[in-house]
Image (cartoon, rainbow, N blue to C red; front, side, top):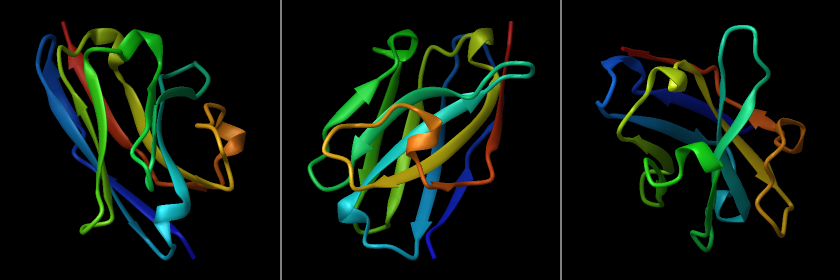
Length: 125
């Protein structure tokens, strides 16, 4: 059974940085797409970034392009989300997710079959 465990959230001032980690287990992840999503209070869960584990191709939501970087460490089975130049609007619970069987990089929550428990990111102004 695939398990995803996020860590690295916290409280940071605007302009600061955080790095989120997602430790994955229970699957052959070279065949997976890994995604990061976020959900702010009262809002729907939204796509942030995705990476194809096998080839490393990436895709970002427009508002985070140039500020966030998704990457993976094959040896550690871990996916990262480096977040720089954080803004108060980035405040949300951030979730790691895994999808398999996609030729493209899926961006909708229902396209991902496995989810972590989430980690809170709060950016103060």
